[in-house]
Length: 353
Image 1 (cartoon, rainbow, N blue to C red):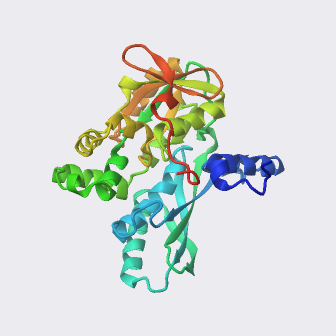
Image 2: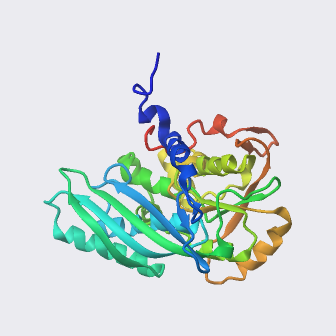
Image 3: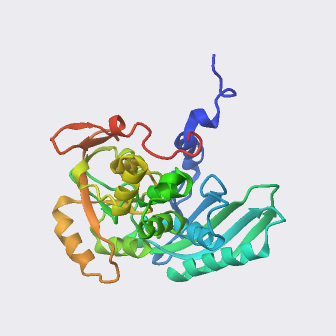
């Protein structure tokens, strides 16, 4: 008979582990905790007109990024943008960062200089500052923990839960570009060498230097039309599944409306993969996935398009219906089937992948 002692993290999975923590600590919150364990960002009410947003995300060499291949400047940018994406999904703006840096003592100082230059430039882009951190020695690994805090007006906070049946599902930008970049960097190098130079560069930058949608998230929050939102880090299908379960609704995705990045299409074809599969499961695009009541879609589009600060488009890709937290796919022949039939794994799970 299997006991708790025999169950491992691989059995539980990342999200089962998170649920275990939420069930243990979730009933201990005071009235100042607006959102706690289970979301990517904690939301704290300190009084005043804004909420404090707080998140942390680890980046580990040869788990999240190929250590020998990514330039340290790009790594600094990446670690900031990955965290900022979570705050963007709440409609907030990053303000303060702390870096926990764990690395071998033989690490060249030039690596550190370039790494922190990347962090600084990414923070400047979004109007945030580095205010502290910690460092420690490891034997081999490079482990980076970035703690990012931000704020959002109380009237503009967007949570994962808030969608209703009939809400239209939107996504910012395009999908699959980060997976294309990863495949070019660590995949079949004989095929990768045949890639067009411009396409290769854009794909690689999409993976090494993702851009969080902090400005777009703020615009969406200001529209007053968005009911729920999450960023796409683990894969479109998997992150949509999080929204579906949080809202106890089913999602129906229109396969023919998925905005596949042209770079994804070209690289997938070159490497012998299905670009649609990459777009739906690849992850790390750091786009925003959000819902809008059908009657407010026109209002949202007018508001968003009127904000010239963003050149990033938004695309309607499906809707929520009554259900129990599942994701379904509608194809161009009118057939509806579970997303798991097309994407068995769905996306990234730290302890199972």
